[in-house]
Image (cartoon, rainbow, N blue to C red; front, side, top):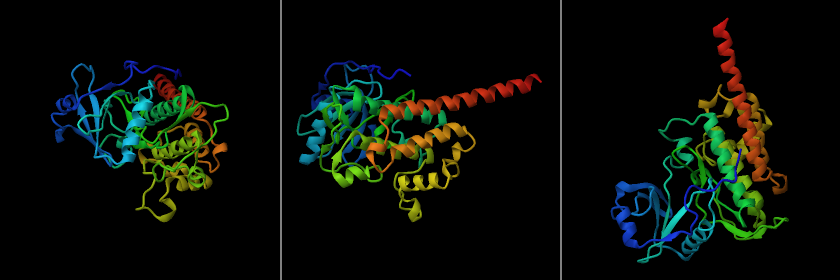
Length: 325
């Protein structure tokens, strides 16, 4: 699979919009236009004159100094990055004491929206694999394909967005760290940030950030996709609260197939499931040096997809043979 594609959006640096343009695009921040809410503020769907596609407009709440830093980090990073599996930043507004980011609009929302506690139809196994491959390719590009090494630091299912074709795009770079790419991949010493349940325990202990911290978070996400449950669920019995710990137990007692999303039972080839579970397990190893690179994860996920497609083709062939006999 070719992974070094350019984004379909223009390659120019992002545009600076006036507050009046943003007001017009959102009908003065009409609640009917809200498509997402978070601690940062609301996200609105809008249409800006001169932009040929719908846009997503993230309006940050009155900002602390930390929020301002994350705002400018996002602009600095995404104005330099154009890749098919990264959400493109179209522009921003730093006008009228407002901090607003304008992105390409992602029709199918977040990956999390399609996994659990939702009225949306469940994703097929093939769709889930393709989404995971796309997200892995986006992270691989950040780690090794851009001019600077970028460590996302907040990989989770709500930061993987899906376009109209269910192509996965990594989003939300406010916590990301950038450094020159080096052959040694030296750790970055930094204050620990991220989301509970996805956070690399080694990074938490040592306060030293490497790209393997993103790999750990991605492993949790892989199990989230397979089990269709949150990274942390305090309503479950103690042994199951942490998805990472629960997944390790399921692998240890060979009960993975009993605990996957009920919708997927009987629909995954055993070889595809084993390959996928092994990838996810390797990603959440305690020691970062034992975890694979995102490039290796993407390639192994592609192999898991091939295994599934081989079984599907064989089943179709058997049905055809049965019809002829």
